[in-house]
Amino acid sequence: MEVTPLLDAVGPLGGGLRRPLTELFPGGAAEDWAVAGDGEWVLHFRCYLLRDRHGRVVLVDAGIGGVDSPASTWAPVPGGLVAELAGHGVMPGDIDTVVLTHLHSDHASGTIAEGVPVFPNARHVIQRAEIDWIENGGPNPTLERVVRPLTMLIDAVDGEAGVMPGVRVVAAPGHTPGHQVVEVGDVTLTGDLVVHPVQVVNPGVFYANDEDPERAVASRRAVLDGVRAKGGSIGTSHFAEPFTELA
Image (tube, rainbow, N blue to C red; front, side):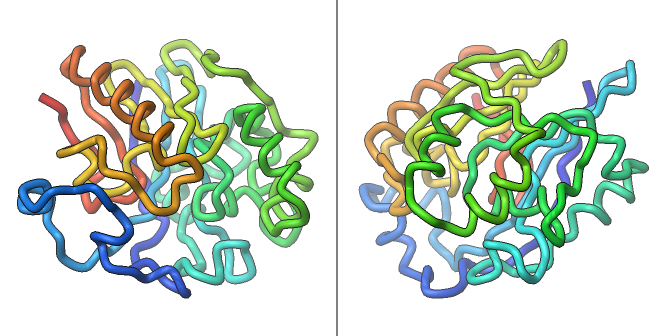
């Protein structure tokens, strides 16, 4: 299985979301930050391309989208995902499956452009709990401009599910109620389970934008412990480097 990181965009946390790192990530000790680094937080908005020898193609997360996407109020739109895919010889119609780790705008907005699906031949794998959360949250841009246009392409799953041979999703709630990670051999693609390197140093560090910080900590500990136990690595969405080996 080939796992290729795709850089959709790079930029600081924008809009009205800028806050000191110690406020965004409460609970970290001075020694945690000494290891992780406490400089300006520049986000790398990253997706992942999975391909096997049989030609099956999976995209994990879809980035920030265009200039009018739900992420445009705070992220450095437009994203470059389609161009990144083309650079690897993949056109949008080649994608068999899109896995969305969760439905925050910087992970899901790139599924839709001008009101229509960008990946028309792909099933879009999302945890059912995530869809329920968005649908029950009242009118919101993600529901109206992402989920509704994708309705006929959504494959809702519960908990753990196979995506294709060698690839599975596993529920890891907390950041959002239906957040999931993607396991590909000894690599786990973590979505926003781990947002900053300080959470690898100390998984107990909260993230201020988690829906349920304590549940997120429990999920993070479980996933990172599992990756360490098999000597694997994580592929993250927002770190400067895509892969981090866990000893």
